Length: 197
Image (tube, rainbow, N blue to C red; front, side, top):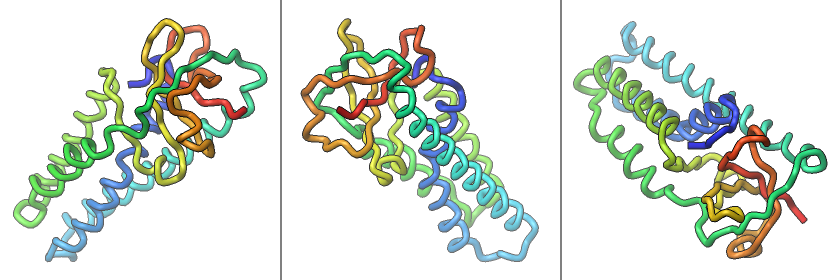
């Protein structure tokens, strides 16, 4: 997904992107399950709450890493990026391909343990897929917090992803902006932070 960014950034981005899904899973599981006093219910409830807590910590780490980039603009080289007219893409597809199958395919009412295991396996498969592919995974929480992810290109025509906050979308699209690379500055990465003028 994000070439040559550090593992903490990749993992934080992925885990925080699943935060809305697992929050809904806790709510749905709590509302659907009848046998709330069983040991199995308590285990799954604590597991989901732990997963959501880890995802909240991941979101804080991700925002912290992005916030630190503002300090690097003076020290790290900037590159010119052409911002395409494509931003925050894939949200609808993400919702339909991730949320809908999990909420409709796995019946917690019929077999709570099997459904819980299937949800975890599904999320693990998503994780491996996104780490080993060039596909972009939208992060709904970041969008709700005011961050935008744009598709852009650098001078050699290579497609890159650009993250910004607080810059009007209309002023960015189909324009050239300066950006700093997120991750290893000496390698050819594909994630940039848009520098405010």
